[in-house]
Image (cartoon, rainbow, N blue to C red):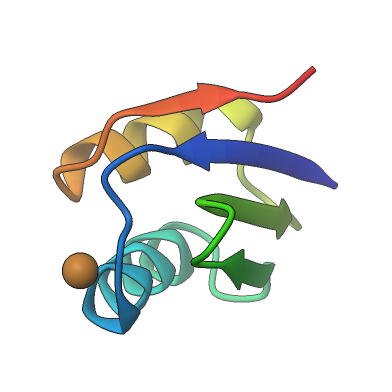
Length: 67
Ligand SMILES: [Cu+2]
């Protein structure tokens, strides 16, 4: 599992957009979102971490990978 901190994700609408972007990239991935903590956790099946990051950015959000 990889977790990203997504600064601009503030409501369910944002969470929905990000979930859709990630699922479009990797339909079998498991996506868990914590809006209050601005965290997006992904268990990717096919996508790389880099591709997941790109999908979040392309959806219009800036993100930082959590170490
Ligand atoms: Cu929002």
